Length: 190
Image (tube, rainbow, N blue to C red; front, side):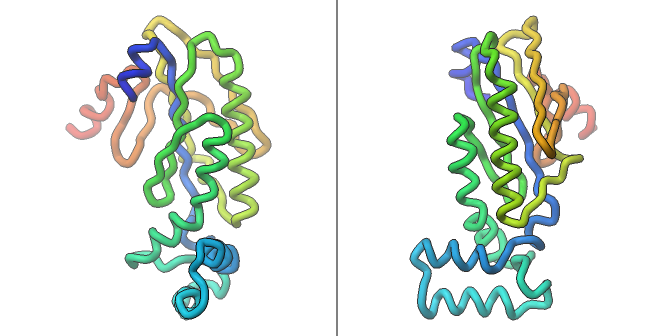
């Protein structure tokens, strides 16, 4: 968590999104269109088309896993997701198919639940349009209160996703608690 957020006595929320079988569901048609719009045309575009379709994966979906290009193509495929996240005032980090959204806010901000719900609804619509799906069992929400004595009442409700705030999450193998003590992580390692 950014020390400026703590210094300014703001609370923060961390939302961990996990894509289900992300590499297997990437639409070749959409990916090739994105590459074309990025200026990858002509022979280079034909090379990508051949690369994607000359595999034993389903005929119109998936990027090769275990390759150098697989993660890069997935990152390119999901680039427009960042615009949606930013449009709701969130920041984000992506690592392969794990996406972390975070937002700092004044503890008395009554719009946080609605902002999170709206952002997640738009993400869900984007994912549906891009043939991706969230792994609901691995999508988590963690609230870092501005002060330990503050209780943030955050309730999220969307059509397909309603993560309840938890006190500990696992992010890229690290257990993070809402007070940043790392007690749970140390216990899980030892």
